[in-house]
Amino acid sequence: MKPDCLFCQIAHGDKEKIVWENDVAAAFRDLHPKAPTHLLLVPKRHVDNLNQLDDSELGGQLMMAAKELASTLKVTDGYRVVINTGPHAGMVDHLHLHLMAGKPLDDYPR
Image (tube, rainbow, N blue to C red; front, side, top):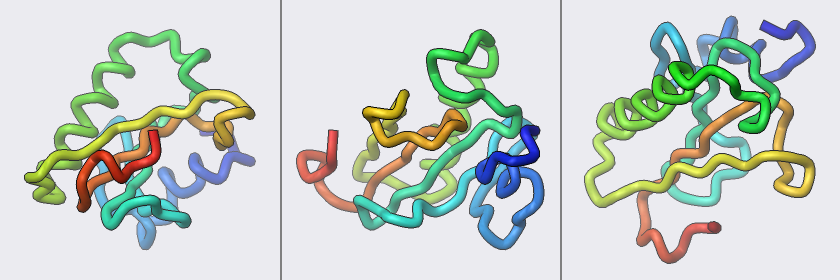
């Protein structure tokens, strides 16, 4: 955990915001949703961004967590998982996956 990281603080202590979690990751609602269902899935271990991810096991666990989160949310018509990396992508400095669903995929930002 990185003490000054907002996403670390949420994942490790803000149980009111957490919608889903396991030992590896936590999910909470995006403050500026781009879809009816829009959650952020963050690893509990701090990793700045995808370029800094050097643990293939953690990468796989995050993908499986996204699948489990979608199942828990009963997303049946499809969903999109997006990873933004770097300042031009408007990203927070903590690796996170956006899980978006609830309307046709063509309407989602890419």
